[in-house]
Image 1 (cartoon, rainbow, N blue to C red):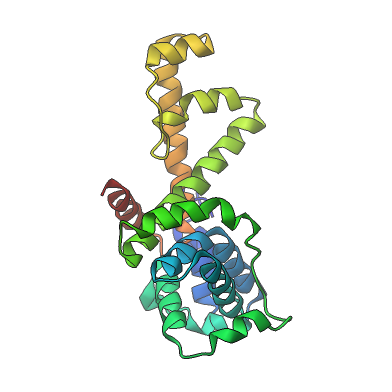
Image 2: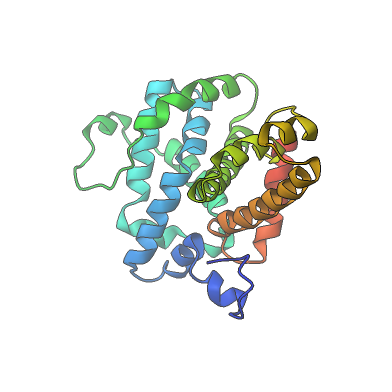
Length: 247
């Protein structure tokens, strides 16, 4: 789905192929595509769950195991029936699901004895994020930590896709010089300093920043479209995520 595609196809016709809307549409049936879409979403947004679980009082090691077990159970075939359109966004569905998982009286000692046929998500890269979760745990309640890390994940995925586009055209250096002007960026170089670094005029820098931000917004809408059930929710979700990060 390309929400920024100016083609003549009706937006809702395209939207029907997005990840979460595909999962919701398949809740009353069996769809291998929907199951694959759900797994893709889980792979992209596992970190907010990990941070949420850790903030609920679990150690980093236990949070790692519980996060792994949560997704292994969520990705079983019967999980599609829990995709309630009333819950709307995948973000909301995931938070409700992990709350239910943690409140379940199921014997956690079985986490070390997972069945081999359960679909799991590898978390080898989780260690690089653990210090962030530990820091956040000292400052905010679990739900807010989940929302903040969800927002950062969305922006991070969007930024990586934009970087890949620049890299594919041999302009990685241009992206690295200008990414400070994106919502997820950081830096204090002036237009003049960037112009000198790139060997272009300040006017050219301003023009390039405008194009960068325009493309970022288009990619952000596309990323968020994968996590909501209808196209009408995209702008509302963008506003919510920006407000979360502004606090």
